[in-house]
Length: 333
Ligand SMILES: CC[C@H](O)CC(=O)C(=O)O
Ligand SMILES: [Mn+2]
Image (cartoon, rainbow, N blue to C red; front, top):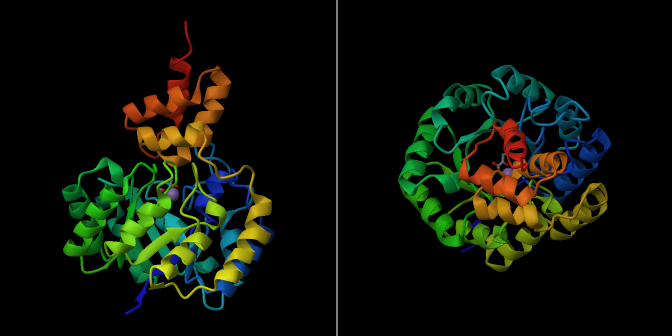
């Protein structure tokens, strides 16, 4: 029996980190047109750090994300636009504005131990009639029991799916299997998985996730995303179809969009470089990479040392300014 898997493309949100939040309406519109034509059910559009992320701390967006959401929604006949909301960066008003611009899904993202800060945002998502999802970031940092506890909180607030998010690209397939299987046993709602390729494990981890029962899976075209990027959506469609899963996606149309729209806008190849490898090794947020490279350059220190130290400090999203303090502290007196 073929099993259905819902693929959510994050090129236009996680990819925002990789292009330093420089997406234009024309780029988003062209990518959205291709994703819709290929039959991708959901795709995410917003600043890399979610709604309200445009700031000195996280990086200023070239174009207001509401304009990008509108441009994307205008291309959708069957696909739906998702937005990411990290409570404290984005607000309930930001979500309402995103809905007016055409968003149909919200993913409320918290650190893996902090799901309780999302209760009112999940409730608002449901009230607004959105597909509403919980997103547990940095899931490698918590043991399985903690993840189950936090996912149950999300479900109790009304989340219709809960994601295990490997923000640092630090997990190995057994880590993924353990987490997804535990959530499948403990939850009634759907379970999702989001990977980063810092240790070259994104596809293997994605396969482990679907085999353990995840039915929502993220990817990005040409792997465009923070760090070494995400599971490459067009490759994942092929791999999942070969494994007997049904994605409902037209592979050629998706490849064309990846090649004709995404490849030309990339600012660097999505490779596993010294920095992205250390993200996975030390368990650091993938979105910290470009900040660490900038800070290392500014203070004349090795980006690997900065990231290793950040990993030791167990820094979490929102602590981007710590990267500069660490780089400064590494300068030899
Ligand atoms: C900083 C938000 C982050 O990019 C969300 C995400 O995609 C992840 O945690 O991997
Ligand atoms: Mn990510």
